[in-house]
Image (tube, rainbow, N blue to C red; front, side):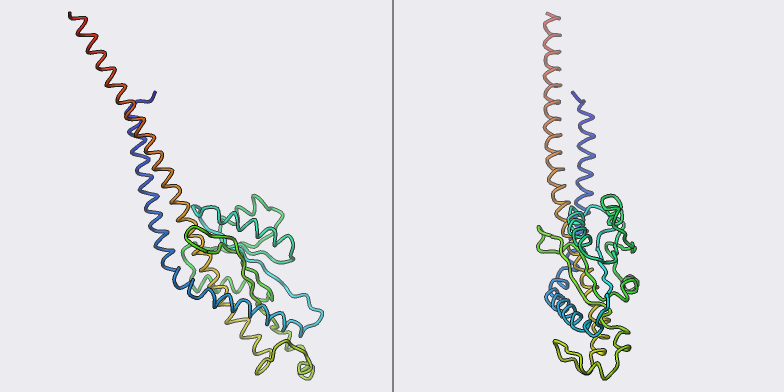
Length: 279
């Protein structure tokens, strides 16, 4: 049986851990709330842009018959822990995709790098430094530079559905759909190309716009969605931890009461034994 002092020390340390987890929970809630409204309000629009980009990209790529367009897969993981299991779940879906498609793989975050090296060392990837709570213009510029030249980009991330539910998801966007290819096609031949859509003023102008403005917007908003999903997952993970800590405190408190009662009973028996001895 443990001493009452040892149990009291355990209770104090557990209560301090409870306070620390509560603080992390408040920080996660604040960060999640900060990006939640803006991200969710634009989700439908961004998904529409993604579909438009992919559809138009597939149409414009027909202007370069016989090409083998490059594809990229981007995994938005994390740079630290305490994000629940959303990172691991997303990795499972990512591996299924990567092993059935030919593409260059990019991983954002140290956690993703470690997981990929541990569980899928056969998958070769390029790692890009990534901070969980900071995504500024410098980062996006560096990321888009890495993705320059890819005509097909798939981004895997943890999607926020509700506070309690986050699930792996992907978003596809066409990158450099025509790029310099349009310049290699004879202008007369361009006019005879059959496209699904009518492009004004010219397919190359549309391609240039799609490959820059829309790509930038979709990638940026998808990164923010990934952050939202991660912090929601962290919030739920910390909430479960608080429940476990509270249960632990209850167990320790009951143990302390039992030890206290045993000590008091032992004192009473000692006192009675002393009284009998004096008599």
